[in-house]
Image (cartoon, rainbow, N blue to C red):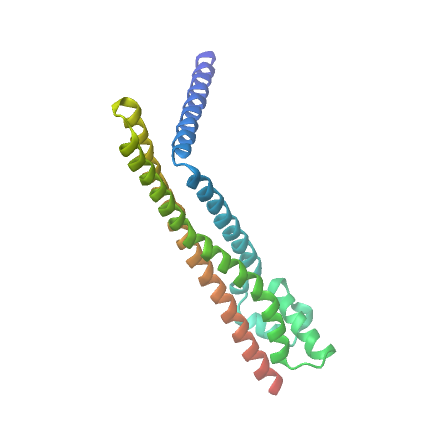
Length: 216
């Protein structure tokens, strides 16, 4: 038992030491990329913060989790309404009955209020995704300029070679990081747009069904 506990301790300390080494190497590589790496870090946090926020809000809607036969029944049976779909139907019914609006007007108001935050956040996310490789390219240009400056002004020797290597590493790190930030962002943005389109289609279909039911 004692030897087993000792092996666990040895494994724990070895893992902690390896994690510290990996973290230190990661920080060292990140700082070698220059100022552009800071901008890419901010862009990366912004992309995924907005992305997961939009995903969480779309997940709470859960329009696809309600069978059509169920929400068709909710049009006439308000007491049975549940969840996000039930809340949307309650709002539409309130606008139709209390304010004297048509079903179309009610859904237009709900659609405007529900969709605008999603559309705004997806636009911002798309801008940030497009900016990531451009910032990486800008870092590449500044790194190459630093390399050429070292080659033209350096007097040779280890110091000059160190400056050239630093400029090249800065150029390569920023390019790679910009692509690594942008590629997952593109896929996440596409996935969120698909879910957002499904939400819009649901509202349009529900409006059509409700309008037909009102005419019967």
